[in-house]
Amino acid sequence: MSNVENFKEMTLVQKINIIDEIIDADIRDFLVRDNGDLDLVNVVEQNDLILVYIEYQGACVSCPSSGGTLMSIQNILQRKLSEDIRVLTV
Image 1 (cartoon, rainbow, N blue to C red):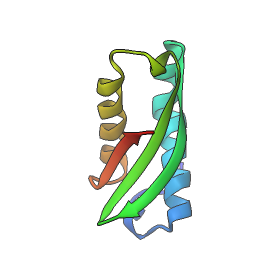
Image 2 (cartoon, rainbow, N blue to C red):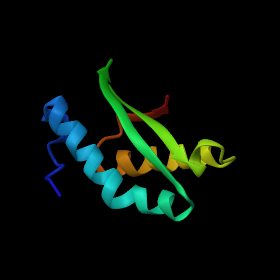
Image 3 (spheres, helix red, strand yellow):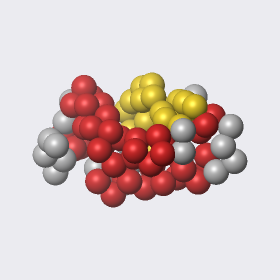
């Protein structure tokens, strides 16, 4: 995995790539185990925040726990990359 210590200084493309790496390494397996998944739709830098837009797939689309899952995804990305990350669904 790439070095994430300089996340805030990365280009947007580098940020997208490292976010995608973390989703694959630390998040996707948990979703797939419950017949779900997610797509990384977009990453936008806005007002000192990094907005990460995802779209749930499979069982995650109708799961009543998807709000809690969204917060867990956000917490993982914040812990590994930056407190300025916000995860939103499309």
